[in-house]
Length: 172
Image 1 (cartoon, helix red, strand yellow):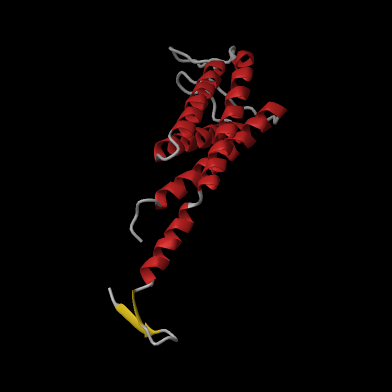
Image 2 (cartoon, rainbow, N blue to C red):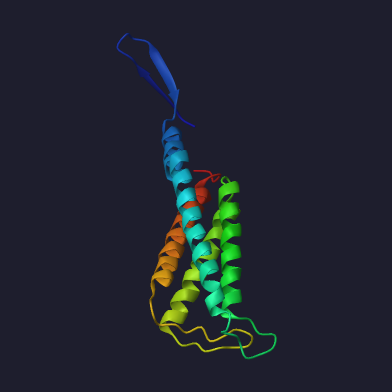
């Protein structure tokens, strides 16, 4: 490290370490985000996943009759319940593991995966394959729209948490 020396108006020689290091640390701290920002993103992510879980759980009984052709077959209602349970697990992880990337990663994967499946089956008739039913549903009803928005919000919130935690711990 270089040393800088300068005289102040009183004629006293003041020596300081290179100030660039302090500037780099400040930039890293700024990229990490503040505690309130992390808390808000955590709550937004948890809320989006909570809404997703509620909507899927409520819709599941109406989709129990749609089953796959192959044995063992799964109903679309069972898949909706699975999505609801996974979303609740992600809520718990994101709320309990606030300083860990694992919670944000699981939340992102669940929310983005749910949104991806919803959009896939809304716009493409993939058909049933194996034990999975044909879930093509091009109609956008209220619950489907709420679920899509909640999953998108949760995915974006979790991605922001991942990006913020990715900077922590790296040297500048």
